[in-house]
Amino acid sequence: MNHHVTHLESALDGTRFPADQVHTMHQGRPLWVRYDLDQIRARVCPQDFARRPPSLWRYRELLPLPFEVEPISLGEGSTPLLACPRLGRELGLKRLFIKDEAQLPTGSFKSRGMTVAVSMAHYLGLRRLAAPTAGNAGGALAAYGARAGMEVFVFMPEDTPIINQMEAWLCGARVFLVNGLITDCGKIVREGIARLGWFDVSTLKEPYRLEGKKTMGLELAEQMDWQLPDVIFYPTGGGTGLIGMWKAFQELHQLGWLQAPHMPRLVSCQSDGCAPIVRAFEAGERFAEPFANAHTVASGLRVPAAVGDFMMLDAIRASGGWARTGREERIVAWMRRVAQAEGITICPETAVCFDTLEALLAEGKVNTDETIVVFNTGAAQKYPEAVPLSLPRLDRTQPIDYEALVQ
Ligand SMILES: *Cc1c(COP(=O)(O)O)cnc(C)c1O
Image (cartoon, rainbow, N blue to C red; front, side, top):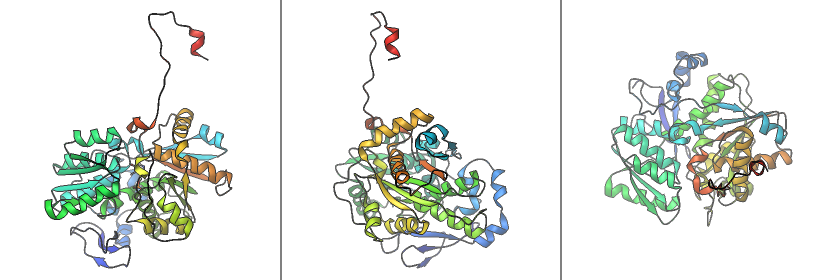
């Protein structure tokens, strides 16, 4: 086949599997996709990417889809890396950036994973897909599934943001609300495989969403001229974003494409309402216990148990970073503060990152002259329920007191 994948490999014990077949997990744990990096190095150089259309598919050599196969795409462009001088000044940081993933199709970085996973599923002949979702993954799956003409089943907790329910339904998915958590939805999907023959596209239960998320790391490196920042703040739920980025950095390092050998410290940010990875990190464990009574308005972080827990914890530790909680009760304040300072409307998940950033700065774990990148993984506009509003009203039948408007 015309791609550079050599094989797939169990993240747990290294067992190898051939490319070009349908794969799920090995012993209940995820698989890595491995590439012939020597062959890739011989075929392309970093400068080639700049000459291609600004889509994540420009990294085609580092993705699993055969070159002659057309991807299932919604025009997922590269997302801007926005300097945040005003907010940086407020926080005492010289080089603060937000990578704004909210500008992707369906308003979150989930589209990166889904364009690759749905393209691979379609290429491998699968026609019926299912996934549990805390919100954005369901919307993205439904959109790419519709684009591919595939049948999609989505199971979401009944308190999933209404926009996610709507987008999945509009895209023709069969959407079901479950009185439980994403793990309960996951169980329904798992047990339905034998009955309805759908393919489970849950986070890390198939190998290719991770490859799509990896492009965040590739794109960041390209935007920073093939150097990496000092610290990356990333809101982690299932973990594909963090793990995918770390995989990207390892591949770039092995390709010899990085200007400096220096790797960023990864900070995995979770809400104190659902923090299984933080708890395992602090306890020095490689696997995380399920987090009881998980509760957060940052629905993407409402993941009490993740099959990729050890992959996240390995990456965080290898990078010299941390897993830390941000305060649930500060989410709305941070959403407003960031938007007010920079005009970037961040999702509640990213608000948690800013609370974590402030704490690590105060502890001296992050220095004021370091280059800091915070990922805005989704659009604030997808979370109307998270932001309570009480705006002043004007009565058009009465004279307006203009001086009072500027109070
Ligand atoms: C899914 C999601 C996350 C968590 O991402 P993982 O890669 O699953 O850890 C964070 N933010 C938003 C907006 C999400 O939709």
